[in-house]
Image (cartoon, rainbow, N blue to C red; front, side, top):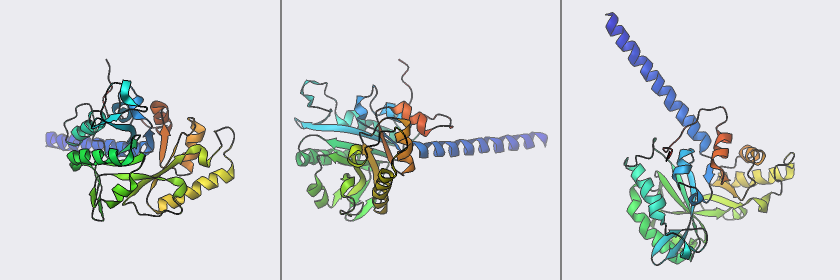
Length: 282
């Protein structure tokens, strides 16, 4: 009788521990959902450094060269050829299929923002073809219906707006110009995010209090974007805690950064660290 009681008691304690751990991970994940890895491919371990820091939003610049989608910030002619599939799509798909041993926890949802640097239409034509191979994990649009997947592709830079809009079935969306969000009110069948350069809206760099007129201007743009279910990002924002704090207070959804660890620490203040990818100890 006593043994049976102990067995049941231990099972109950084990269940409570698992429940609390899951709740903690969800809370942490919610905090880090604001982290956006700008030019993610510059890091030592593209994608994995972002995942290791708990980020769910990463950016990759691409060029179409000789039929391949190459990841690079400037012309990739003299750089090591690294493709979008090699660095991002294949690892994410393996994670989605449970085959990626580098990833500790299931990572979902993830936004992969693709900044097209070459011709918009030609590059997107190739990208659209490639994305079909990864359809099981991708958010999709199909004749007016959106299905949310584990990974959402959002295009910025040179945007193939007309091509994308004409498609009845696709696996990509567009990053809208935040400055146009007041006038262009298309639903999220086209747009998932709305972005602009920080300095187009705000001149404050974190010294002293944020001016009330700039704070209100940002809040107004954010409110309109949220009305149409678009997440807001300001790129090239100053990399300091004062600016990060102001962006969070103004309900900006994605905090753009090259400093993954620093932003992670800021977003996770008071919480235990959680990693989504294994640390490379070599």
